[in-house]
Amino acid sequence: MDEKETILTNTCSFSGIKPIMMDLPYPPVQVSGQNQVYANLLSVDYCGSVSELSAITQYVNNENRLFIRNCQTARTMLGLAMAEMMHLQKLGEMIVLLGGNIDFTAKYQNGRRWMWTPEHLNIPEQAKKMVIADIEAEKAAINQYRAHMKMIQDQGVNDVLMRIIKDEEYHIMILQSLI
Image (cartoon, rainbow, N blue to C red; front, side):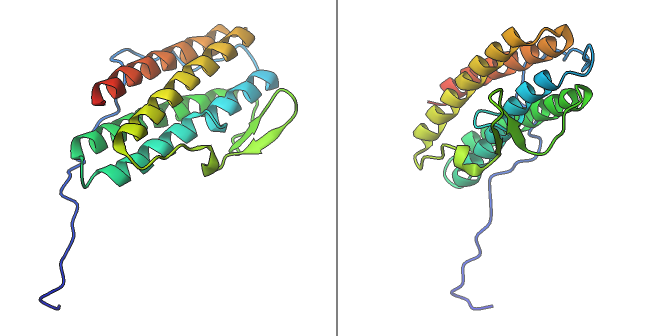
């Protein structure tokens, strides 16, 4: 190895990171019966432009770009992404129980179908703008969940969505503390 070559390593340790979420149990994942309309609504939360898949990808992207200059913020981003992964998993379970299909396509009420794409992400360069974009994404997710809850007449589904909203509200608080 050439003496002038510099070895670069990640000195930001990601060991011990846990999902950042409210310390509350999740209700059981259960549905009253198969309902394709409800499954389609949840597909938008799963992989639409405002979705858990978008949140996971945006948080991991931010973490990858921040770990060298701001380890603690990067660690927070990874913990938030882990919580969003749990939300994605819960939504996926409910979609399947409702008779839907997990194919990374959001199925909208007007019949439009849209496969998930990274074009949904907002990935600014500056750390503060990243956090602000994440806060806006969390707020949009909460609004979308609330709108979907008004359309879904299945208490089991709505209980899980309400629990996810609690995490999203907590995420906003955590993100605001980073600014």
